[in-house]
Amino acid sequence: MNTVQPLGVRGVLPAFVVGHELEERELAAIEAPGFLLQVAQQAGGYCMSYPSVVGVVLRLEANLAHGLEDAARAVRGFAAMAEDPDLRLLEREFPSLLPLVYTRGDEYSKPQLATLQSFVGRYFRAPGVESGIEAFLRCAACDPLDYFRGWRALSIASQRTCIDGNYPDVATDESELFDENMLAALARVARTLGFETPPRVFFMWENSD
Image 1 (spheres, rainbow, N blue to C red):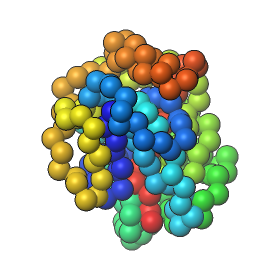
Image 2 (image 1 turned 180 degrees about the vertical axis):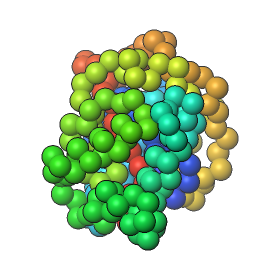
Image 3 (image 1 turned 180 degrees about the horizontal axis):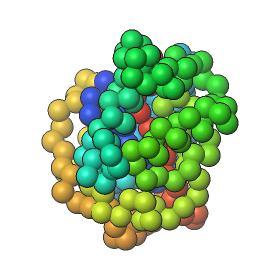
Image 4 (image 1 turned 30 degrees about the vertical axis):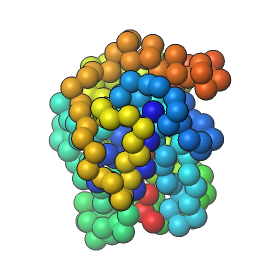
């Protein structure tokens, strides 16, 4: 299975990821189709943590056609929150997001989660937000197909590759669409990892630090 470490690889995030959260571990030995990836995220602002999810990556930028009016603004807003945030742009165009960068690893409060949910929901139909820290949100339980059927999924053809800031140019593809077959493939891999529960939806962007 391929691993993506999104920090420093422009264009992977922001994204919804449908899958399972797990303790960070090496999954290279697990055979999986190219659309199943381990996303090794860096989150939490200054006080970093490293949540990891195995699943299907649905990038916002690749799925603007599924968005609502001016969906590209969501990508622009979260890009401004990425490493070395553009604070002037946030203050000018996305003031509600400005207090949500350069945090110190604390869980977002309910009002902060509501702000993020409102912002994302303005541009994409998405499940509610349940919990999270900077750059890593857990969405409420749902059927992912109700929200993301037909979305383009990020796929990496080469096997056992780690995409990170040192190796950002691995060939990718987004011609495959999220559907029941992808969920079935995810379930098979999840069972080998010991998961019996349905997958959940996560939302990620690049951490500010």
